[in-house]
Image 1 (tube, rainbow, N blue to C red):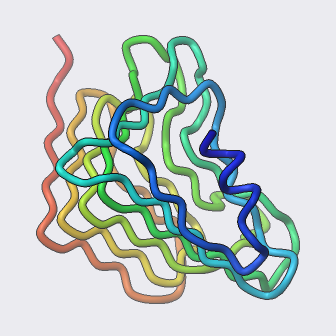
Image 2 (cartoon, one colour):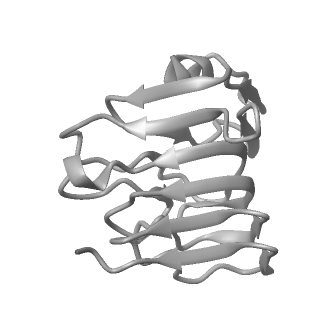
Length: 171
């Protein structure tokens, strides 16, 4: 459902509003590079932790992945008001939000996480190499396995504001 809604957006982008409830992801969600020069994608839940994205058992893939290989394309992603559950007890690998951690750094743009709660990830929760501006606002990462946020470069401001990181050892 989510992928189909994203694929139906115009090339300039748009906003996807997720209803309350759980969305079980059987594959990663692809955030596609624009064919023009820029694109903005907004994915918004209902707030109050009423919307949950959870990786289905045994998927072993990343939750969100940017795609594209043409240089000088701007892809801005805005995520807000949802819970992302990596379900690490039933997935041996992956689960992260993967924003162009490729070697060619062809996708560039901004990333904003606002009022999101990330729980039960096995790998890095957010991995980016080309965000121009990275903002993590009033959000939480809580996990026994994940390493948090990995920023491998970029060009702009990196802001983490009013957010919490709780990493518990597995027993």
